Amino acid sequence: MAQQADVFKKLIAHAKEYGFIFQSSEIYDGLSAVYDYGQLGVELKNNLKEYWWKSMVLLHENIVGLDSAIFMHPTVWKASGHVGAFNDPLIDNKDSKKRYRADVLIEEHREKIHAKIDKEVEKAEKRFGDKFDKQQFLATNERVVGYAKQIEELSARFVAALEASNLDEIKNIIVENGIVCPVSGTCNWTDVRQFNLMFSTQMGSVSEDAGTIYLRPETAQGIFVNYLNVQKSGRMKIPFGIAQIGKAFRNEIVARQFIFRMREFEQMEMQFFVKPGEEMKWYELWKERRLKWHHALGLGVEKYRFHNHEKLAHYANAAADIEFNFPFGFKEIEGIHSRTDFDLKNHQEFSGKKLQYFDNEENQSYIPYVIETSIGLDRLFLSVLATAYDEEVLDKEDGTKDERVVLRIPPALAPIKLAVLPLTKKDGLPEKASEIVNDLKFEFNTYYEEKDTIGRRYRRMDAIGTPYCVTVDHQSLQDNTVTIRYRDTMLQERVKISELKELIKGNVSIVSMLKKI
Ligand code: ATP
Image (cartoon, rainbow, N blue to C red; front, side, top):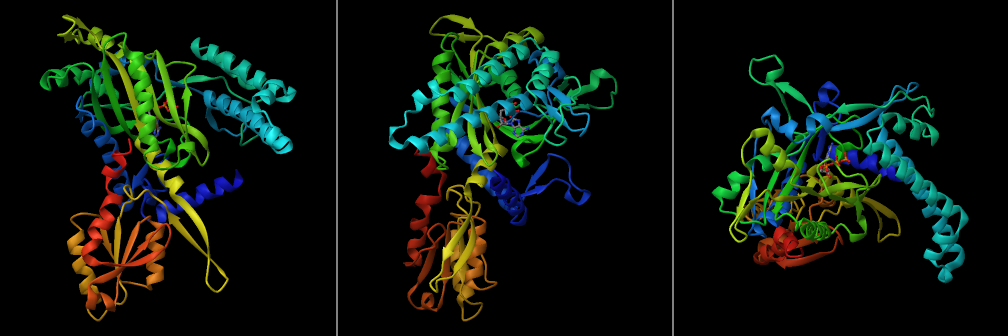
Protein backbone atom coordinates (compact mmCIF):
# COMPACT_ATOMS: atom_id res chain seq x y z
CA MET A 1 0.00 0.00 0.00
CA ALA A 2 2.86 2.35 0.94
CA GLN A 3 4.39 1.58 -2.42
CA GLN A 4 1.10 2.30 -4.20
CA ALA A 5 0.80 5.66 -2.42
CA ASP A 6 4.31 6.40 -3.57
CA VAL A 7 3.47 5.61 -7.19
CA PHE A 8 0.35 7.74 -6.92
CA LYS A 9 2.45 10.71 -5.79
CA LYS A 10 4.78 10.17 -8.72
CA LEU A 11 1.81 10.00 -11.06
CA ILE A 12 0.55 13.39 -9.82
CA ALA A 13 4.02 14.90 -10.30
CA HIS A 14 4.24 13.33 -13.76
CA ALA A 15 0.83 14.71 -14.75
CA LYS A 16 2.08 18.19 -13.89
CA GLU A 17 5.54 17.89 -15.40
CA TYR A 18 4.20 16.85 -18.79
CA GLY A 19 1.24 19.20 -19.03
CA PHE A 20 -1.69 16.93 -18.20
CA ILE A 21 -3.01 18.47 -14.98
CA PHE A 22 -2.11 21.58 -12.98
CA GLN A 23 -3.40 22.75 -9.64
CA SER A 24 -5.81 25.64 -10.20
CA SER A 25 -4.36 29.10 -9.43
CA GLU A 26 -1.06 27.49 -8.53
CA ILE A 27 0.87 30.76 -8.32
CA TYR A 28 -1.43 31.72 -5.44
CA ASP A 29 -0.74 28.39 -3.73
CA GLY A 30 -3.68 26.73 -5.43
CA LEU A 31 -7.39 26.38 -4.78
CA SER A 32 -8.30 23.25 -2.89
CA ALA A 33 -9.79 20.43 -4.99
CA VAL A 34 -9.89 22.45 -8.20
CA TYR A 35 -7.65 21.51 -11.12
CA ASP A 36 -6.83 22.71 -14.62
CA TYR A 37 -6.16 20.45 -17.58
CA GLY A 38 -3.00 21.30 -19.50
CA GLN A 39 -2.16 20.98 -23.17
CA LEU A 40 -2.02 17.17 -23.15
CA GLY A 41 -4.70 16.71 -20.51
CA VAL A 42 -7.27 18.53 -22.58
CA GLU A 43 -6.54 16.27 -25.58
CA LEU A 44 -7.00 13.11 -23.52
CA LYS A 45 -10.13 14.54 -21.95
CA ASN A 46 -11.58 15.42 -25.35
CA ASN A 47 -10.90 11.90 -26.60
CA LEU A 48 -12.72 10.44 -23.60
CA LYS A 49 -15.65 12.73 -24.23
CA GLU A 50 -15.73 11.70 -27.88
CA TYR A 51 -15.71 8.02 -26.96
CA TRP A 52 -18.61 8.49 -24.56
CA TRP A 53 -20.60 10.87 -26.76
CA LYS A 54 -20.32 8.74 -29.87
CA SER A 55 -21.17 5.57 -27.95
CA MET A 56 -24.38 7.23 -26.83
CA VAL A 57 -25.51 9.51 -29.63
CA LEU A 58 -23.95 7.89 -32.69
CA LEU A 59 -24.61 4.27 -31.80
CA HIS A 60 -28.17 4.68 -30.56
CA GLU A 61 -30.73 6.16 -32.88
CA ASN A 62 -33.01 6.84 -29.92
CA ILE A 63 -30.46 8.88 -27.94
CA VAL A 64 -29.85 12.56 -28.66
CA GLY A 65 -27.62 15.20 -27.09
CA LEU A 66 -28.23 18.36 -25.10
CA ASP A 67 -26.19 21.23 -23.70
CA SER A 68 -28.17 22.93 -20.97
CA ALA A 69 -27.04 25.91 -18.88
CA ILE A 70 -25.25 25.59 -15.56
CA PHE A 71 -27.52 28.14 -13.93
CA MET A 72 -31.12 27.06 -13.51
CA HIS A 73 -34.22 28.43 -11.84
CA PRO A 74 -33.78 28.03 -8.06
CA THR A 75 -37.02 26.06 -7.74
CA VAL A 76 -35.45 23.29 -9.84
CA TRP A 77 -33.30 22.38 -6.83
CA LYS A 78 -36.26 22.41 -4.47
CA ALA A 79 -38.18 20.09 -6.77
CA SER A 80 -35.21 17.76 -7.22
CA GLY A 81 -34.73 17.47 -3.47
CA HIS A 82 -31.26 19.00 -3.50
CA VAL A 83 -32.13 21.98 -1.28
CA GLY A 84 -33.53 19.69 1.39
CA ALA A 85 -31.55 16.52 1.03
CA PHE A 86 -28.28 16.96 -0.84
CA ASN A 87 -26.30 16.71 2.35
CA ASP A 88 -23.31 14.83 3.64
CA PRO A 89 -22.95 14.00 7.33
CA LEU A 90 -19.75 15.62 8.58
CA ILE A 91 -17.76 15.10 11.74
CA ASP A 92 -14.67 16.82 13.14
CA ASN A 93 -11.88 15.40 15.20
CA LYS A 94 -11.30 17.78 18.10
CA ASP A 95 -7.60 16.99 18.39
CA SER A 96 -6.45 17.18 14.78
CA LYS A 97 -9.17 19.69 13.79
CA LYS A 98 -9.63 17.62 10.63
CA ARG A 99 -13.04 17.24 9.08
CA TYR A 100 -14.39 13.97 7.68
CA ARG A 101 -17.49 12.56 6.07
CA ALA A 102 -18.94 10.34 8.77
CA ASP A 103 -20.31 7.85 6.24
CA VAL A 104 -16.91 7.56 4.57
CA LEU A 105 -15.19 6.87 7.91
CA ILE A 106 -17.60 4.00 8.51
CA GLU A 107 -17.27 2.66 4.97
CA GLU A 108 -13.49 2.73 5.22
CA HIS A 109 -13.67 0.87 8.51
CA ARG A 110 -15.80 -1.77 6.82
CA GLU A 111 -13.27 -2.04 3.99
CA LYS A 112 -10.55 -2.65 6.56
CA ILE A 113 -12.45 -5.63 7.98
CA HIS A 114 -12.95 -6.89 4.42
CA ALA A 115 -9.21 -6.65 3.89
CA LYS A 116 -8.67 -8.82 6.96
CA ILE A 117 -10.87 -11.52 5.42
CA ASP A 118 -8.94 -11.29 2.14
CA LYS A 119 -5.69 -11.71 4.04
CA GLU A 120 -6.93 -14.83 5.83
CA VAL A 121 -8.05 -16.27 2.49
CA GLU A 122 -4.69 -15.50 0.95
CA LYS A 123 -2.84 -17.19 3.82
CA ALA A 124 -5.05 -20.27 3.67
CA GLU A 125 -4.71 -20.50 -0.10
CA LYS A 126 -0.95 -20.68 0.31
CA ARG A 127 -1.20 -23.25 3.08
CA PHE A 128 -3.66 -25.65 1.39
CA GLY A 129 -2.60 -25.17 -2.22
CA ASP A 130 -4.78 -27.03 -4.76
CA LYS A 131 -6.95 -28.54 -2.05
CA PHE A 132 -8.18 -25.13 -0.93
CA ASP A 133 -11.96 -24.73 -1.00
CA LYS A 134 -12.66 -21.01 -0.68
CA GLN A 135 -16.41 -21.29 -0.08
CA GLN A 136 -15.94 -23.82 2.67
CA PHE A 137 -13.21 -21.74 4.25
CA LEU A 138 -15.38 -18.61 4.24
CA ALA A 139 -18.24 -20.52 5.82
CA THR A 140 -16.30 -22.33 8.52
CA ASN A 141 -13.13 -20.51 9.54
CA GLU A 142 -13.86 -19.04 12.94
CA ARG A 143 -11.94 -15.82 12.50
CA VAL A 144 -13.39 -15.16 9.04
CA VAL A 145 -16.93 -15.90 10.18
CA GLY A 146 -16.39 -13.43 13.03
CA TYR A 147 -15.23 -10.71 10.65
CA ALA A 148 -18.17 -11.36 8.30
CA LYS A 149 -20.58 -11.04 11.22
CA GLN A 150 -18.93 -7.77 12.24
CA ILE A 151 -19.41 -6.41 8.69
CA GLU A 152 -23.01 -7.54 8.57
CA GLU A 153 -23.90 -5.94 11.89
CA LEU A 154 -22.07 -2.74 11.07
CA SER A 155 -23.79 -2.47 7.68
CA ALA A 156 -27.26 -3.09 9.08
CA ARG A 157 -26.79 -0.49 11.82
CA PHE A 158 -25.29 2.03 9.41
CA VAL A 159 -28.07 1.68 6.82
CA ALA A 160 -30.74 1.99 9.52
CA ALA A 161 -29.08 5.15 10.87
CA LEU A 162 -28.81 6.70 7.41
CA GLU A 163 -32.38 5.87 6.54
CA ALA A 164 -33.64 7.41 9.75
CA SER A 165 -31.22 10.37 9.32
CA ASN A 166 -30.18 9.58 12.90
CA LEU A 167 -26.99 11.59 13.28
CA ASP A 168 -26.47 10.62 16.96
CA GLU A 169 -26.54 6.97 15.99
CA ILE A 170 -23.96 7.58 13.24
CA LYS A 171 -21.65 9.10 15.84
CA ASN A 172 -22.29 6.16 18.19
CA ILE A 173 -21.30 3.74 15.44
CA ILE A 174 -18.02 5.60 14.95
CA VAL A 175 -17.21 5.73 18.66
CA GLU A 176 -18.31 2.19 19.51
CA ASN A 177 -16.32 0.71 16.66
CA GLY A 178 -13.23 2.54 17.84
CA ILE A 179 -12.86 4.44 14.56
CA VAL A 180 -10.06 6.93 15.09
CA CYS A 181 -8.90 10.00 13.19
CA PRO A 182 -6.09 8.92 10.85
CA VAL A 183 -4.16 12.08 11.74
CA SER A 184 -4.45 12.35 15.54
CA GLY A 185 -5.21 8.68 16.17
CA THR A 186 -7.87 9.68 18.72
CA CYS A 187 -11.58 9.03 19.04
CA ASN A 188 -12.32 12.57 20.26
CA TRP A 189 -15.16 13.42 17.84
CA THR A 190 -17.67 16.27 17.60
CA ASP A 191 -21.33 15.53 16.92
CA VAL A 192 -22.31 14.68 13.37
CA ARG A 193 -23.89 17.54 11.39
CA GLN A 194 -25.53 17.72 7.97
CA PHE A 195 -23.82 19.88 5.37
CA ASN A 196 -25.43 20.94 2.08
CA LEU A 197 -23.10 20.45 -0.86
CA MET A 198 -24.51 23.06 -3.22
CA PHE A 199 -22.64 26.26 -4.05
CA SER A 200 -24.85 29.33 -4.22
CA THR A 201 -24.41 32.75 -5.74
CA GLN A 202 -26.47 35.85 -6.52
CA MET A 203 -28.02 36.55 -9.87
CA GLY A 204 -28.25 40.15 -11.09
CA SER A 205 -28.20 42.93 -8.55
CA VAL A 206 -30.79 41.50 -6.19
CA SER A 207 -29.19 40.64 -2.90
CA GLU A 208 -32.18 39.22 -1.04
CA ASP A 209 -32.93 35.56 -0.94
CA ALA A 210 -34.99 35.67 -4.12
CA GLY A 211 -31.83 36.28 -6.14
CA THR A 212 -30.00 33.24 -4.79
CA ILE A 213 -29.21 30.67 -7.40
CA TYR A 214 -27.14 27.51 -7.33
CA LEU A 215 -24.32 26.13 -9.41
CA ARG A 216 -25.72 22.81 -10.58
CA PRO A 217 -24.52 19.83 -8.52
CA GLU A 218 -25.44 17.44 -11.36
CA THR A 219 -26.21 17.88 -15.04
CA ALA A 220 -29.28 15.63 -14.87
CA GLN A 221 -31.81 18.31 -13.95
CA GLY A 222 -31.08 20.25 -17.15
CA ILE A 223 -32.18 17.13 -19.02
CA PHE A 224 -35.35 16.62 -16.98
CA VAL A 225 -36.66 20.14 -17.40
CA ASN A 226 -36.01 19.92 -21.15
CA TYR A 227 -37.29 16.40 -21.70
CA LEU A 228 -40.59 17.45 -23.30
CA ASN A 229 -38.87 20.13 -25.43
CA VAL A 230 -36.57 17.48 -26.86
CA GLN A 231 -39.28 14.86 -27.15
CA LYS A 232 -41.63 17.14 -29.05
CA SER A 233 -39.11 18.96 -31.24
CA GLY A 234 -37.26 15.72 -32.01
CA ARG A 235 -40.44 13.62 -32.36
CA MET A 236 -38.89 11.12 -29.97
CA LYS A 237 -40.76 7.97 -29.00
CA ILE A 238 -40.36 6.20 -25.69
CA PRO A 239 -37.96 4.57 -24.95
CA PHE A 240 -35.48 7.35 -25.71
CA GLY A 241 -32.47 8.96 -24.08
CA ILE A 242 -30.89 12.40 -23.71
CA ALA A 243 -27.14 12.66 -23.21
CA GLN A 244 -25.20 15.59 -21.84
CA ILE A 245 -21.62 16.43 -20.91
CA GLY A 246 -21.03 19.36 -18.60
CA LYS A 247 -19.62 20.86 -15.45
CA ALA A 248 -21.06 20.18 -12.02
CA PHE A 249 -20.14 21.74 -8.68
CA ARG A 250 -20.18 20.28 -5.18
CA ASN A 251 -18.77 21.79 -2.03
CA GLU A 252 -17.22 18.48 -0.99
CA ILE A 253 -16.36 18.31 2.70
CA VAL A 254 -13.27 16.24 2.21
CA ALA A 255 -11.77 16.80 -1.17
CA ARG A 256 -8.70 14.69 -1.72
CA GLN A 257 -7.17 12.01 -3.89
CA PHE A 258 -6.29 14.40 -6.68
CA ILE A 259 -8.96 14.63 -9.39
CA PHE A 260 -11.02 11.84 -7.82
CA ARG A 261 -13.03 14.23 -5.66
CA MET A 262 -13.14 17.79 -6.91
CA ARG A 263 -15.31 20.78 -6.14
CA GLU A 264 -15.70 21.59 -9.84
CA PHE A 265 -15.85 18.56 -12.09
CA GLU A 266 -17.37 17.25 -15.28
CA GLN A 267 -20.12 14.69 -15.68
CA MET A 268 -21.30 12.68 -18.66
CA GLU A 269 -24.89 11.76 -17.99
CA MET A 270 -27.57 10.04 -19.99
CA GLN A 271 -31.19 9.91 -18.89
CA PHE A 272 -33.22 7.16 -20.54
CA PHE A 273 -37.01 7.62 -20.50
CA VAL A 274 -39.06 4.42 -20.36
CA LYS A 275 -42.59 3.18 -19.86
CA PRO A 276 -43.49 2.80 -16.15
CA GLY A 277 -43.12 -0.82 -15.13
CA GLU A 278 -40.39 -1.49 -17.67
CA GLU A 279 -37.65 0.29 -15.73
CA MET A 280 -36.03 -2.80 -14.20
CA LYS A 281 -35.50 -4.38 -17.61
CA TRP A 282 -33.78 -1.19 -18.84
CA TYR A 283 -31.86 -0.78 -15.62
CA GLU A 284 -30.30 -4.23 -16.04
CA LEU A 285 -29.63 -3.58 -19.71
CA TRP A 286 -27.87 -0.28 -19.05
CA LYS A 287 -25.77 -1.83 -16.30
CA GLU A 288 -24.60 -4.41 -18.79
CA ARG A 289 -24.02 -1.90 -21.59
CA ARG A 290 -22.07 0.48 -19.42
CA LEU A 291 -19.77 -2.24 -18.09
CA LYS A 292 -19.09 -3.35 -21.64
CA TRP A 293 -18.24 0.23 -22.56
CA HIS A 294 -15.67 0.38 -19.75
CA HIS A 295 -14.20 -2.96 -20.74
CA ALA A 296 -13.71 -1.76 -24.33
CA LEU A 297 -11.34 0.92 -23.03
CA GLY A 298 -8.83 -1.88 -22.61
CA LEU A 299 -7.66 -1.08 -19.08
CA GLY A 300 -8.33 -4.67 -17.91
CA VAL A 301 -11.68 -6.25 -17.05
CA GLU A 302 -10.43 -7.22 -13.58
CA LYS A 303 -10.26 -3.53 -12.70
CA TYR A 304 -14.06 -3.15 -12.57
CA ARG A 305 -16.77 -4.42 -10.28
CA PHE A 306 -20.37 -3.60 -9.46
CA HIS A 307 -21.44 -2.33 -6.09
CA ASN A 308 -25.19 -2.40 -5.45
CA HIS A 309 -26.45 0.34 -3.16
CA GLU A 310 -27.82 -0.70 0.19
CA LYS A 311 -29.25 2.70 1.00
CA LEU A 312 -31.03 4.15 -1.99
CA ALA A 313 -31.04 7.88 -2.68
CA HIS A 314 -34.36 9.66 -2.22
CA TYR A 315 -35.14 9.40 -5.92
CA ALA A 316 -34.17 5.80 -6.74
CA ASN A 317 -35.74 2.34 -6.64
CA ALA A 318 -32.52 0.59 -7.70
CA ALA A 319 -28.95 1.79 -7.94
CA ALA A 320 -25.49 0.39 -8.58
CA ASP A 321 -22.03 1.82 -8.95
CA ILE A 322 -19.40 0.64 -11.33
CA GLU A 323 -16.25 0.72 -9.24
CA PHE A 324 -12.73 0.95 -10.60
CA ASN A 325 -9.58 -0.23 -8.90
CA PHE A 326 -7.83 3.14 -8.44
CA PRO A 327 -4.36 3.36 -6.84
CA PHE A 328 -6.22 3.82 -3.53
CA GLY A 329 -8.58 0.86 -3.98
CA PHE A 330 -11.96 0.13 -5.59
CA LYS A 331 -14.04 3.33 -5.77
CA GLU A 332 -17.06 4.57 -7.72
CA ILE A 333 -16.43 5.72 -11.26
CA GLU A 334 -20.01 5.61 -12.56
CA GLY A 335 -23.48 5.40 -11.09
CA ILE A 336 -26.46 3.69 -12.73
CA HIS A 337 -29.73 4.63 -11.14
CA SER A 338 -33.35 3.79 -11.66
CA ARG A 339 -34.75 7.21 -10.77
CA THR A 340 -38.43 6.28 -11.12
CA ASP A 341 -40.67 9.23 -12.04
CA PHE A 342 -39.42 11.14 -9.01
CA ASP A 343 -37.82 14.07 -10.84
CA LEU A 344 -40.43 14.58 -13.55
CA LYS A 345 -43.30 14.21 -11.11
CA ASN A 346 -41.80 16.81 -8.80
CA HIS A 347 -41.03 19.23 -11.63
CA GLN A 348 -44.62 18.87 -12.79
CA GLU A 349 -45.84 19.64 -9.29
CA PHE A 350 -43.48 22.54 -8.58
CA SER A 351 -43.81 24.17 -12.01
CA GLY A 352 -47.51 23.51 -12.47
CA LYS A 353 -46.75 22.45 -16.08
CA LYS A 354 -47.78 19.06 -17.42
CA LEU A 355 -44.76 16.87 -18.07
CA GLN A 356 -46.65 13.86 -19.37
CA TYR A 357 -45.80 11.93 -22.47
CA PHE A 358 -48.56 10.82 -24.79
CA ASP A 359 -47.99 7.22 -25.81
CA ASN A 360 -49.62 6.66 -29.23
CA GLU A 361 -49.43 2.92 -29.03
CA GLU A 362 -51.01 2.71 -25.59
CA ASN A 363 -53.27 5.66 -26.31
CA GLN A 364 -52.59 7.13 -22.89
CA SER A 365 -50.50 9.76 -21.16
CA TYR A 366 -48.04 9.06 -18.40
CA ILE A 367 -44.93 10.43 -16.71
CA PRO A 368 -42.05 8.26 -17.93
CA TYR A 369 -39.68 6.45 -15.60
CA VAL A 370 -36.00 7.22 -15.91
CA ILE A 371 -32.82 5.17 -15.94
CA GLU A 372 -29.72 7.29 -15.45
CA THR A 373 -26.12 6.52 -16.29
CA SER A 374 -23.77 9.06 -14.75
CA ILE A 375 -20.02 8.96 -15.11
CA GLY A 376 -17.44 11.44 -13.82
CA LEU A 377 -15.15 12.47 -16.65
CA ASP A 378 -12.33 13.35 -14.26
CA ARG A 379 -12.52 10.00 -12.51
CA LEU A 380 -12.48 8.31 -15.90
CA PHE A 381 -9.41 10.38 -16.80
CA LEU A 382 -7.72 9.29 -13.58
CA SER A 383 -8.54 5.63 -14.26
CA VAL A 384 -6.83 5.85 -17.65
CA LEU A 385 -3.79 7.76 -16.41
CA ALA A 386 -3.24 5.59 -13.34
CA THR A 387 -3.47 2.38 -15.34
CA ALA A 388 -1.26 3.72 -18.10
CA TYR A 389 1.58 4.86 -15.82
CA ASP A 390 4.42 2.35 -15.86
CA GLU A 391 7.98 2.54 -14.60
CA GLU A 392 9.70 -0.06 -16.71
CA VAL A 393 13.14 -1.54 -16.09
CA LEU A 394 14.93 -2.40 -19.32
CA ASP A 395 17.76 -4.86 -19.94
CA LYS A 396 20.42 -3.25 -22.06
CA GLU A 397 22.60 -5.14 -24.51
CA ASP A 398 25.72 -4.61 -22.37
CA GLY A 399 24.06 -6.35 -19.43
CA THR A 400 23.27 -3.16 -17.47
CA LYS A 401 19.80 -1.89 -16.60
CA ASP A 402 17.97 1.17 -17.79
CA GLU A 403 14.63 2.66 -16.82
CA ARG A 404 11.85 4.45 -18.63
CA VAL A 405 8.53 5.91 -17.62
CA VAL A 406 5.92 5.04 -20.20
CA LEU A 407 2.26 5.97 -20.32
CA ARG A 408 0.55 3.02 -21.92
CA ILE A 409 -2.54 5.01 -22.83
CA PRO A 410 -4.82 3.12 -25.25
CA PRO A 411 -3.74 4.53 -28.66
CA ALA A 412 -7.25 5.78 -29.48
CA LEU A 413 -7.12 8.00 -26.38
CA ALA A 414 -3.49 9.12 -26.58
CA PRO A 415 -3.17 12.95 -26.74
CA ILE A 416 -0.59 12.74 -29.52
CA LYS A 417 -0.75 9.83 -31.93
CA LEU A 418 2.47 10.26 -33.80
CA ALA A 419 5.80 12.06 -33.40
CA VAL A 420 7.88 12.79 -36.48
CA LEU A 421 11.56 13.11 -35.66
CA PRO A 422 14.35 14.03 -38.10
CA LEU A 423 17.52 12.20 -37.03
CA THR A 424 19.58 15.40 -37.41
CA LYS A 425 18.78 19.07 -37.88
CA LYS A 426 20.49 19.29 -41.26
CA ASP A 427 20.92 17.70 -44.70
CA GLY A 428 17.30 18.26 -45.63
CA LEU A 429 15.96 15.87 -42.95
CA PRO A 430 13.81 18.50 -41.18
CA GLU A 431 12.24 19.41 -44.54
CA LYS A 432 11.43 15.77 -45.26
CA ALA A 433 9.98 15.34 -41.77
CA SER A 434 7.85 18.47 -42.15
CA GLU A 435 6.46 17.08 -45.40
CA ILE A 436 5.24 14.01 -43.50
CA VAL A 437 3.73 16.15 -40.72
CA ASN A 438 1.95 18.34 -43.24
CA ASP A 439 0.40 15.30 -44.84
CA LEU A 440 -0.61 13.44 -41.67
CA LYS A 441 -1.71 16.34 -39.45
CA PHE A 442 -5.15 16.31 -41.09
CA GLU A 443 -5.67 12.74 -39.86
CA PHE A 444 -3.93 12.58 -36.49
CA ASN A 445 -2.61 14.78 -33.74
CA THR A 446 0.99 14.86 -34.98
CA TYR A 447 4.02 16.29 -33.21
CA TYR A 448 7.32 17.47 -34.68
CA GLU A 449 10.53 17.53 -32.66
CA GLU A 450 14.14 18.00 -33.76
CA LYS A 451 15.92 18.88 -30.51
CA ASP A 452 18.05 16.41 -28.48
CA THR A 453 19.31 12.93 -29.24
CA ILE A 454 16.84 10.53 -30.78
CA GLY A 455 16.94 8.38 -27.61
CA ARG A 456 15.89 11.31 -25.43
CA ARG A 457 13.13 12.23 -27.84
CA TYR A 458 11.79 8.65 -27.75
CA ARG A 459 11.75 8.74 -23.94
CA ARG A 460 9.83 12.02 -23.91
CA MET A 461 7.23 10.55 -26.25
CA ASP A 462 7.00 7.42 -24.05
CA ALA A 463 6.41 9.67 -21.04
CA ILE A 464 3.37 11.29 -22.66
CA GLY A 465 2.01 8.09 -24.17
CA THR A 466 2.62 8.72 -27.89
CA PRO A 467 2.08 5.31 -29.50
CA TYR A 468 4.17 5.90 -32.65
CA CYS A 469 7.47 7.65 -33.37
CA VAL A 470 8.58 8.05 -36.96
CA THR A 471 12.27 8.77 -37.56
CA VAL A 472 13.46 10.38 -40.75
CA ASP A 473 17.10 9.61 -41.69
CA HIS A 474 19.37 9.91 -44.70
CA GLN A 475 17.97 6.75 -46.25
CA SER A 476 14.53 8.38 -46.19
CA LEU A 477 15.75 10.95 -48.70
CA GLN A 478 16.76 8.20 -51.09
CA ASP A 479 13.97 5.61 -50.87
CA ASN A 480 11.07 7.36 -49.10
CA THR A 481 11.12 4.99 -46.15
CA VAL A 482 11.23 5.80 -42.43
CA THR A 483 11.65 3.91 -39.17
CA ILE A 484 8.52 3.50 -37.12
CA ARG A 485 8.97 2.78 -33.41
CA TYR A 486 6.21 1.28 -31.28
CA ARG A 487 5.81 2.72 -27.78
CA ASP A 488 4.86 -0.44 -25.92
CA THR A 489 7.36 -2.89 -27.38
CA MET A 490 9.98 -0.34 -28.47
CA LEU A 491 10.36 -2.44 -31.62
CA GLN A 492 11.29 -0.62 -34.78
CA GLU A 493 10.68 -1.40 -38.42
CA ARG A 494 11.31 0.24 -41.75
CA VAL A 495 8.19 1.22 -43.67
CA LYS A 496 7.30 3.28 -46.73
CA ILE A 497 6.17 6.83 -46.01
CA SER A 498 3.17 6.21 -48.25
CA GLU A 499 2.06 3.36 -45.97
CA LEU A 500 2.21 5.32 -42.69
CA LYS A 501 -1.35 6.58 -42.76
CA GLU A 502 -2.94 3.17 -43.14
CA LEU A 503 -0.62 1.58 -40.61
CA ILE A 504 -1.53 4.04 -37.87
CA LYS A 505 -5.13 4.81 -38.70
CA GLY A 506 -6.79 1.55 -37.65
CA ASN A 507 -5.31 1.64 -34.16
CA VAL A 508 -5.73 5.23 -33.17
CA SER A 509 -9.30 5.94 -34.15
CA ILE A 510 -12.10 6.01 -31.59
CA VAL A 511 -14.03 3.83 -34.05
CA SER A 512 -11.78 0.88 -33.19
CA MET A 513 -12.94 1.20 -29.57
CA LEU A 514 -16.57 1.78 -30.43
CA LYS A 515 -16.61 -1.43 -32.46
CA LYS A 516 -15.69 -3.41 -29.35
CA ILE A 517 -18.77 -2.33 -27.41
P1 ATP B 1 -19.37 9.79 -4.19
O1 ATP B 1 -20.15 8.74 -3.43
O2 ATP B 1 -17.98 9.35 -4.57
O3 ATP B 1 -19.42 11.14 -3.54
P2 ATP B 1 -21.73 10.20 -5.73
O4 ATP B 1 -22.42 8.90 -5.49
O5 ATP B 1 -22.15 11.39 -4.95
O6 ATP B 1 -20.12 10.00 -5.57
P3 ATP B 1 -23.10 10.70 -8.17
O7 ATP B 1 -23.93 11.74 -7.59
O8 ATP B 1 -23.68 9.37 -8.49
O9 ATP B 1 -21.77 10.52 -7.26
O10 ATP B 1 -22.38 11.31 -9.46
C1 ATP B 1 -22.11 10.55 -10.62
C2 ATP B 1 -20.64 10.52 -10.93
O11 ATP B 1 -20.06 11.82 -10.89
C3 ATP B 1 -19.82 9.70 -9.95
O12 ATP B 1 -19.85 8.33 -10.29
C4 ATP B 1 -18.44 10.28 -10.11
O13 ATP B 1 -17.75 9.66 -11.19
C5 ATP B 1 -18.70 11.72 -10.46
N1 ATP B 1 -18.48 12.58 -9.30
C6 ATP B 1 -19.32 12.82 -8.28
N2 ATP B 1 -18.79 13.67 -7.39
C7 ATP B 1 -17.56 14.00 -7.88
C8 ATP B 1 -16.52 14.85 -7.43
N3 ATP B 1 -16.64 15.56 -6.33
N4 ATP B 1 -15.39 14.95 -8.19
C9 ATP B 1 -15.26 14.24 -9.33
N5 ATP B 1 -16.21 13.43 -9.80
C10 ATP B 1 -17.35 13.30 -9.09
